[in-house]
Every structure is written in structure tokens, then in C-alpha cells.
Length: 365
Image (tube, rainbow, N blue to C red; front, side, top):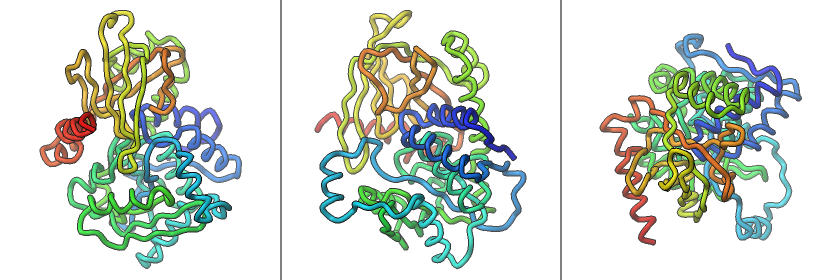
């Protein structure tokens, strides 16, 4: 068992999760706040190794659904107009869990995060603490992903439904069934403007553990500890390569970032002008919530499912795409994904060609 005992531990975890969030994965500031409140309220924040679990019970997966973009004034006004004003639930994910357990007719035994991300994984951890359910040290993607169809259980045939969504205002949405997980993803996105905390993928633990990428929470903690322990970027780069397999692929100044909401995803590009040994070159990163394609001098140099992560040159801190600032200096890293995300089956959902097709459509608009 690994236990988070102090605020420094939370900071290390959030930093590592943000790196593996590859530009998305939810708001790390909100994740930090949630875990701080949980810890200060006297709850235990911990996770267990897959080897510690019993061979019975149901694993469920909490996640947040929606665009990574900040809420627009239009959406805020719509919420007010339809009466979404007073928040009545501090943790709607807990309400969604209880509703799902009612549908299943049994209590959940384990929680497996959908993905890694500063905001999303923190919410799963908080649910584990509040509900008193063991959190497994692992997740279903080894990174953040924009679609539930891109996690291992979905790729290899497990249904995401039933899914329960809840919001701060007391609303509950149930997706009881769907003909496939692409439909479930679309249904979830359509309601995510109002209800964003969702719990689904109820799987027998014997099935679930086949798809858990083990040790990713502990890995995130120790990567975060490394990034927080030094501002010496040179030493940081070497240790990241040696200890975590993260390779530096570009150094640059952010020239600009542009995006728009497309079907409840934050879709856009960040453009970097090379510095130091990369001077005279450019890199463009295309993202759909998370970073998926990196073009160096207009040639594709990195793509999902491998991770494309950005850290600040000033302090080695990883950043989400909403936190990038024009004219600041950044280092861009590529980290190899797990082999199960690189099979022929997986490539249909999260491979290079999948995102290149979406990128081409984006450029035509």
C-alpha cells in the first residue's frame, strides 16, 4: 500500500499525473484542491498493488467527461437560465457511484482510474477515500485520453455501460445501455456540458485486472518528486530519460496557441519556435484535449498512443494546454506507451492514423 500523508506528497502526485496527462487530463489545480481537502478532512488517500487484491468483487471506473477548455460565458449563462445556480453536492461522483451500485445490486469493491491526469485521477482518488473503496495502483490507459473508447477494456471488448453521471446541482443521468462504446461516448459527451462526473465500466475484478496498467500512480508520484526536486533542467532531462524513458524531442518558445470546441472536445494547435540546438526549426502540436500529433518542420515526429508532454524551462513543471503562455520557453518530451496500446486492434482507436484523419478534418474547417 502507498499512502499520501502530507501536502508535499499531493504536490508530487499532481505534478507527475499532469506530465502523464499529456496536455489534458483535467485541471491539476482543481485536483490539488480536492486532494488537499480530503487529506485535511481526515480521510486516507492511498492505493494498493494489484497483487494485494482478492479474486472477487466488482471494479468501477470514475472519470470526468467533457471538453478540456474553460467553461464559456455562453455555457455559464445557459446554466443560469435553466436553474443550475445552487450547488448541493460537494462530490457528485460519490452520488454517481451510489446510483450505479443501486443499478448493479451490489457494492463496488475496487476503483480503477480511467486514465492519468492531474484533475481526473485526483477525483478517482477522492472517491476512493470518501467511499472507503480500495484504489488500485494503475489505470486503463497509462496516460490521459479524450475518449472512453481509447482505454484498454473498451479496445478489447468490454462495455462501458451502465454509466451514471452526476453534477454539483443534483442532476443524475443514467446511460443504461448502448450498442457500443462509441455510442456511449457520444451520449456522455452530449450531457457533459451539464453533468461531468461519471462512473462506469463495472467489471468483474478478474476481467478488469487483465487491462490494468500496473504501478502508474506510484510512477506518477516519483516522476513528480523528481520534477519538483530540481530546477536544473539539464539534470532533469537526463534523469527523465534514464528513469522514465521520456525523451526530449524539442525546445521552443510558444509562438501561439489556438483552439475551438468541437463536439465537446478542446481541439487546436500550439506552435513553437526552436531555441538552442533547435534554433531555426519549428514544432506544431495538435491536440484533442490531449496532445496527439507533433510535427517538427512539418514532418510528423511523435504521435499517440505515445505521450507528448510539455514542461516549463523555468522550473521543470509540466503543463496542460490551457496553461501555456505565449513567449514562454518549453521543453517537449515523448514517452513510449504500453505495448497493448500499439496492437493492430488498438491502433483503430488511438493510433497515428486515427488522429491524422481527425487532424485533416480539423484543418479543412
